Amino acid sequence: MKRLLILLLSGALLLSLALAQVSAGGAAEEVDVEHDELVVYSPLHEYEISRLLRAFERDTGINTEFIRLSAGELAARIVAEKDNPGGDVFFGGPSETHEAIIPEGALRPYESPRAAETDADYHHPEFYWSGFYVGPMGFAINTARWDEAMDGEEYPRTWEDLLDPRLEGEISMASPAASGTAYNIVATQFFRYVSEDEAWNYLEQLDRNVPFYTSSGAAPARHAGTGEAIIGIAFAHDVMKPMDAGFPLALSIPQESGWEIGAVSIIEGGPNPSAAEVFVDWILGPEAQQLHTDLSLRISTHPEVQMPPGATPLAELDLVDYDYEWAGAHRSRIVDEWNELFQ
View 1 (tube, rainbow, N blue to C red):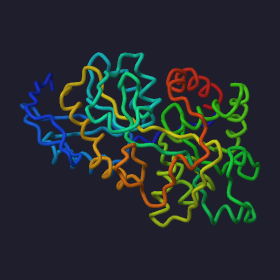
View 2: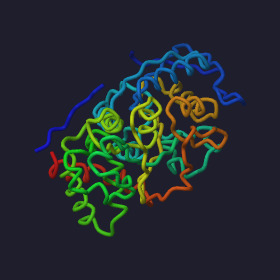
View 3: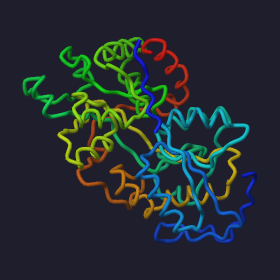
View 4: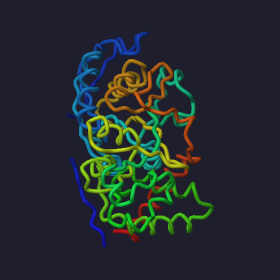
């Protein structure tokens, strides 16, 4: 059995919002609150979260704190805390991870006045979550180790290319039990194949080349960057970061690539409900989304935000027909079966 590497990186507060409007420039105006606090649960990198929340505090006057875990771990925590929520906002991670905990009564719907500024496809139909970024899945390839092991062959462009026996022990991937990124990878296979049996057969073959599974979806790209693996499977933006830092990496986006809508949602019964709504309004605005894009290299859902350098629009990629509603509804079943097979 492979071991899962765990890399885990008061009272009710009355909020009186006198000015909860959103400025024309995209940042929320300062809010008059009696108790100005917000607790954010997020799988984003600490570097991104801290700078985004610093800007939010500046723009709104609301003090913040955050807890950073992987998306799957945060979803489990939110459900476990349902009777006494500790957080206000679930910020980031694929939409299907948010989708999966809606039936648990863990989230509450909120239609932000800024939601109309982005395509309806980037929001839950009943606004249990709203999307603020999108991104395709990619392969992070250590160029030096690839050339050495694969005799300079072309970089992999399909999921089947990852099954090459020469890559045994050389592919880094996260666990779908902990990582929203990894669950997207697994769910993608169910959309690529006609039957679930075919998808499981592919995952069994891929497992032979994965020595262990991490809990962080961004870790595989870093493993490839440092040469611990030849290939790391991660979202493209998580590959671009170590590339920009100078690591010897190439990014390949495969045919029938999985992709995500990165979501923000409000936790049902959280201690600061009005501040949570202010945060959603703020992050859906163009100024906050541009800041997020500049920090994270993700593609914003807002049409006014400039794409990060080197990014390819989703419309120009060969993407799988990813059904986030199906992925969310079947997450528990698929993760349980995956754990039985591979842990």
